[in-house]
Structure formats: C-alpha cells, structure tokens
Image (cartoon, rainbow, N blue to C red; front, side, top):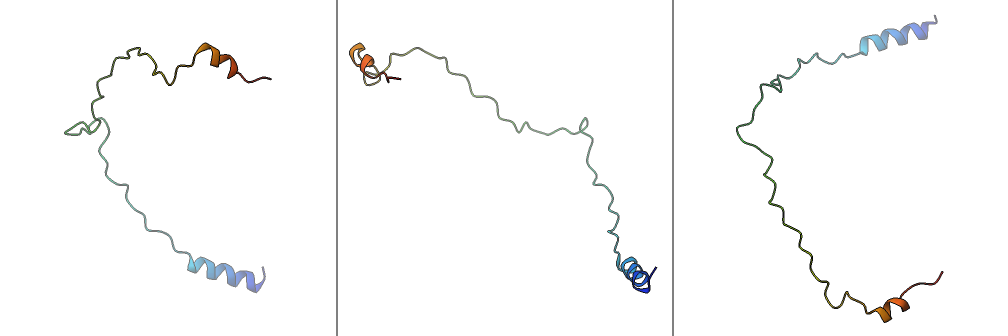
Length: 72
C-alpha cells in the first residue's frame, strides 16, 4: 500500500460522519386508530336515466345521411 493510499484511507475514515440514529416515530397501530368523523363524503344520490328525444339539430334526415358517408 502506498503512502498516498494509506493517507487517503485515514483521512476518509476520519471525515466519515455517521447520521444520528433516530428512533422510529410513534404511530398508533391501524386496528386501534379511529377517526372521530368519516372524512369520505357520502355518495350523491344517483339520477335515473331517462330516454329523451334528440334535439332537431342532432337529427339528420335520411336523404342527408346517405350523402354524409365517406367513400373509401
């Protein structure tokens, strides 16, 4: 081992800073944890679907339907 390699390993070992050991946060276990209220809102009442006639602007007469087809 060269002198430079020995010096480098000593310097790097001395400069190494270990992060402090942190204790895990205290979190209650899920089976014991209960909210005082329900944060999820209740679903909105569903609307019944009713068949409605399309407006006149959406309806095309049969004569126009044939002309609106694209040719291949």
